Image 1 (cartoon, protein in one colour):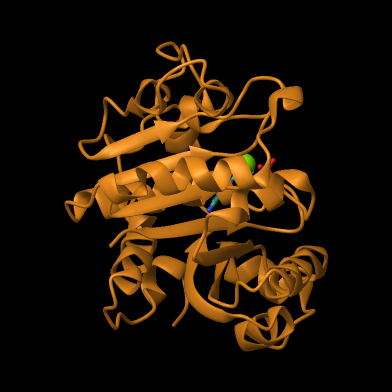
Image 2 (image 1 turned 90 degrees about the horizontal axis):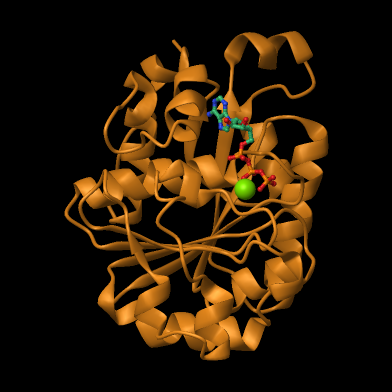
Length: 250
Ligand SMILES: Nc1ncnc2c1ncn2[C@@H]1O[C@H](COP(=O)(O)OP(=O)(O)OP(=O)(O)O)[C@@H](O)[C@H]1O
Ligand SMILES: [Mg+2]
């Protein structure tokens, strides 16, 4: 059975799209078939991160309106076997409604082991569409108060729509900055404030950003990719320790 997971955050720019791609690559490396669905209508970016932006003809709104077969709006990532993308529309006006998005994802999900849905920031209509088909959520947060508040909002919104299966990804962690900020006693305080169980911590690493933005995910891998690999393993039900070295924690 496929796992359908939405990646969400209250605040923008926490790293949802970067984490979606980093995690998808590691799942594909475990020989999983992975479909990424970009729900950020008008601000799509996963096509660039997967290096397929020049291949796109159709997007999710074409598939939803019957303008093309659903399969025609799904593109294979050249750089990574087993990884596929259904792109968001270029224009925000073409955003797909939650019920239509759910039907669309339900109609294809059995062809994949994982469907990762990249939500736009916030709790608006784009989030509603992204969350509609999901059975689980990964809430992506940066360890700072404004981001934490957004994560808690998302958690509460997910509960409101009956989606209790949510886990937390702390992204862009830097021990030095965390200590300098001095707001939280430790990472447990961040996790408690988000009221969400932790699934993984990703370091703040310019290499993660560069590889994703260059569309090289799957072909190049920074050392810190171990942290994405660990999240993939945990989704597969394995018990994996936190990669302290990659996070600079003793
Ligand atoms: N672990 C990381 N280390 C360093 N930079 C990162 C990391 N994760 C994301 N970034 C950078 O942070 C910025 C925001 O990332 P990204 O676009 O993935 O966020 P987002 O949550 O999808 O944003 P939006 O809310 O606009 O959709 C980008 O410049 C990205 O390269
Ligand atoms: Mg994004």
